[in-house]
Each structure stands twice: as structure tokens, then as C-alpha cells.
Length: 436
Image (cartoon, rainbow, N blue to C red):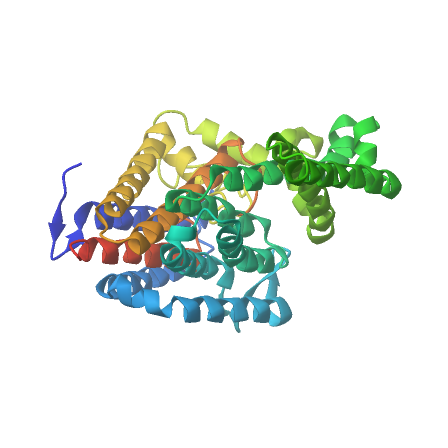
């Protein structure tokens, strides 16, 4: 992809952004039209206003020198954490999560902006500590930078938004040169944590009969015994390292620590997450468990995507959306409407636009002249890609429903502005790429 710029603006990046935002407004309008052609929603007008303001924000951020923004990162991060705390105390409950704050009809979702704030401070810290990034203490502080806002978002509880912090942190830490064993610890713990958290519900709704292994998570005495056993194995491994001087005992401690952390974490997850959120994970395994309840969204979304065929039914000619079979069709399932009305060809066009945006983002990272810019760019690209992969995966039934919006297309000012701020930061890095 040859470089094209006018007045220091990456043409590929800005064109793909404008195309996606415009298509998003078109299908937000489509989501508010009935089968008789009556438009019952004004969401597309609000999205148009947010997009207009957001483009001004994008321009403003792109003009700023990202190196100057670096000096503000502790204050941006600190203010964001305080706002997240305020949201937990005084925020509005929307879709089961206390994640909105505002006055009257005007409100914002601070958790969306928290992702960018985390990326900025984490990039600054990784740059400052790049010589010591392989030390456990350095990695622990970096993990805490990502973990604090993530934990506050999880308490809302907003599982989908909280999940975004994990891949962003891991990719940024990997690019900064941290030890792969640290990252695998998080990955292994996360996978086991998800399994341990879901197993009791899986036994009840999917298996339909008692499973001996699941007793570990339903009987407190047995759970304590198993947890104590793994912790004891970890301690024995440490003794083997320091007393017998055998390094392979360290791997015993490593594996036992992963299991112990996942077991402890599963207790907290089951306390924090609501029943409907756990049910979303169960429904992912088999939507027909509750086809008219929790499984309705997945079933209707897959139906809409499949009915679009190759060329689609035509804009404003969809059936699933215009008959109102698809809930949250302007936000979580905007891709389902697009695939139904524009078909496989339209979906490929959307993927092409996102590919241009993501590839240009990576190229900008490669041309950046300092590590801070590289880390920021990689974090932002990872965030955008994760939103794309999970949202589209939800729509086609290969990902659990987590409520993650499709950046630039889904209805919502907070997610749209977060995406445009991110692109503005990439533009700033591009504009100042010849810094020495």
C-alpha cells in the first residue's frame, strides 16, 4: 500500500474512517425503519451530530503533538479513574450495568474513554521502563495500570468492555519486550478462569446432570481442599527451587499458581457477574437452550446474516431488522443488518475498509520514531481490531454476546468518539513521524 498524504494527513486512514462512519449512519437509519417504511427512531440524527463533533475532535487530536500528550497521561488516567469511581456511585443503570453518567438525556459511557486513557499511560510507563521490562516488578506495575480501570468497569458490571483491556495490555507488553512467560500466565489464568466460572451453569443448563468435576465449584469444602492442594504444590515447588536448586521446580510453581489464581478468580467472577451475563456464555454453547429468551439474539442475528446471501436484500429491504426481530440492532447487531441488506459482498466491503484502517495503523507504528508512539499505536490498533473481531463474531454466532460495539458503525456517541480519538492519535503519530 503506497503512502498517500495531503497536508500531513494519511489519506487511506481518513478515507476508510469517513466511509465506515457514513455506512454506520446509513444502517442506524435502516435499523429505525419498520417494514411499512415508517421511521420511528431519530438515532441516526444523533449519530450524525456525534460524528460531526467527533470528526472535529479527530482533527484537534491529530494536530496535537503526541509527545505533548505524553506529559498529560498521568492526569488523563487519574481523572478517568475518578470518573469511573463516580460512575459506580452515581451513574445510571443501562442494560443491567451502572456504566453511564450525565444529566438528563445527555450521557456518556466513561468506560469507553478509559481504554484510551489506559493505553496512553501504559505506553508512557513501558517506554520509561523499557530497560527493566523483563523484571517481575515492572510487569506487575504495568499490569496494575491496566487492571485498575478494568476492575472498575467489571464492577459496573460490564464484562464486554472489561475484556477489551486484556488483549490490549498483552499486545503492548509483548511489543515492549516483556517475558512471554508473564503473558502466558495471564492467558492461561484467563482461559481457566472463564472455564471455572461457567462450569456450574454449564452443568445445570447444558449437561442437565451432575458432573463429578463440577462439585469442586459447588461444594465449598471440596473447593477449599482443591485450592489448598494446588497452593501447597506451588509452595513445594518454590522450596525445590531455593533448597534443591532445581529450576524445573519453578515450572511446577508456575503451573500451580495459574490454577490457584483461576480458582480464586472464579469465586470473584461468580459474585460480580449477573445471572444474565453468565447465561450469555451458556447460550453461546447452545442457543436453543432458551430460544425465546437468552438465545433469541444469537438465533435472530445468524438468521439475518444468512438471509442476506451474496448480494443482500437491498438497503431498507431487510426483514429481520424491519420486523423488529433483532434486539439492539443499531448497537450490538449493526453488522447483522448490514449483512442482511448488503449481503456477503457488502460485508467484504466493510472488512476491506477496516483492513485498510488497521494496516495503515500498523504502518504508522512501524514508521514512528520513538517507543512511546509505537506502544500507543499498537494499543489502539489492537483495541480497534478486538472490537471488530468480537462484534462480528457475535453477529455470526462464533463469539459470546458481550455487548461490545462495532467501532465507527454502531450507534453511540461514546464508542464513536473513542474510535475517532484513537484515529486522531494515529494521525498525530503519522504527522510527526519524522521526529528525531
